[in-house]
Structure formats: C-alpha cells, structure tokens
Length: 285
Image (tube, rainbow, N blue to C red):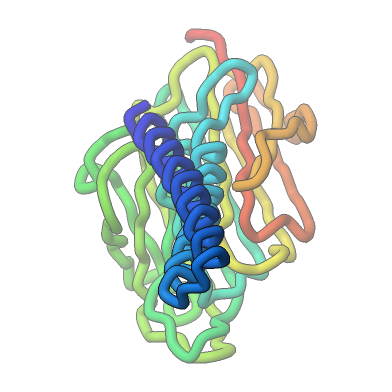
C-alpha cells in the first residue's frame, strides 16, 4: 500500500512538472519569436527537452505502478506486486531451459529451481533469483542452498546464496558460480529453498517469474506437488510488465493418489520477461 501511494504521488508530481515545463517552454518560445533573443530561444529549448524527459520518466513510473497492482479473481498478489517494483532484469545470461518445482505440504512451501543456458557477456560471476511468497521469514532462517551443476555435477559443493537488497515477501537472492563464466560458457544452476507457513488454507497461489533480456526461453516447466488433500481447482494466469493477468487455462492433475496430487505445466518459447501465477483453493484440513 505504501509503495503504491509513493508511486502515485511521484506520478502526479512528474505530470505536474511536464505540464509546467510545457507551459513555460511555450511562453518562452513565443517571447523568443517576438523579441528574437538567442538566450530566449535556448531557454525555450531547455524547457522543451525537460518536458520530454520528464514525460518519458513519468510514463515509465506509470507502467511500474500498473504492474504493481496485480489482482486475480478479487485477490491481490502481494508478493508479485512487490517484486515488480524492484524487478532486476538479467542482461548477461541466456536461459535455454527453466524448471520450477513447488512442493506444498500444509502451510509449508519448498521450491527447487534449475536454470541452464550460456553466458553472452565477457564475464559473469553469479545468477539472481526472485523468491516471492506471502512468507516474511528472515532470510537467515530460510533453508536455502544452491549448486553449480556445470562445475559440480555431483552436488558435493553446496553454495549459500546471499541476499540482495531488503528482506520482505519478495527477496532477491544471488548465487555465485564456482568459477566465473566467460562468453559462450554454458552453465546449469540449481536452487533449493524452504519457506515455512506461507501457503494458507483457502485461496493460495504460486508464482513462476522470468526476468531475462531475451525474447523467448526455449522450454519452461513448472511442476506443483501437493502433499495431503488435493486442491479443489487450479488455474493458470500469465501477466507481464505491460499487461494485466490473463487466464490461460484450468490445469488438471497429471497424477493423484489419496495423499498427494501433482500438476505439470510445460511451455515452449515462453516470454523471457513474464510471470505465471498458479492459483488454487484448498479446504482447511
């Protein structure tokens, strides 16, 4: 709520600057024509440039505000809203395959993410992840561990991710590679993280986000495993920084027993900057 108020206030302030700069620039231009003063012409050009810059900046902030107000079926997706406000787009790595697994038992969520691809810059030392949920447990109390599969396929050298920025329901984690990547080096990284008490009975959701400067990710797989009672239903929405969520489909389980239920969503050529939100309903145990 505070983040949205701040952005709204900033938006109005910038629009006021744009309007004022345009008025002053126009008035100054008229005077410049009448009096043929070079300094007036220069001043009017400065105001015009200022209004253009302020207008572009205001538009950028307005888009950020729109992205930070995601609601689905009457529910605010708070963790994704916060994540959109501080989204960091990766510009050095190309992701070819992304595999997300969410294991939900009671109120506890355990995620396992694996990315593979190659480096497109001269050098890269780490990869960032966004952990978004309604859990605000301190990072030091989370059970997070990563592995550099390209340099440690046997997973004998665990890597402790470190927090980038502030705590909260949306956290940015950075995982350093065991060895720096060079241009065209391939990589594969796996991250495991346990988030307690973040999935309540009733309405719940899980977000799968991609933040890379590439048009498409060749393959993205999202697997959701529920231990205990199965959800009454599960639906998939997709949204981006420019668009509000769109319902893609109702997802049926691929496997179900008396004590577990599994869903699988596989997409080829998924947008490199996008979010899929998996919403579901679980009755109280």
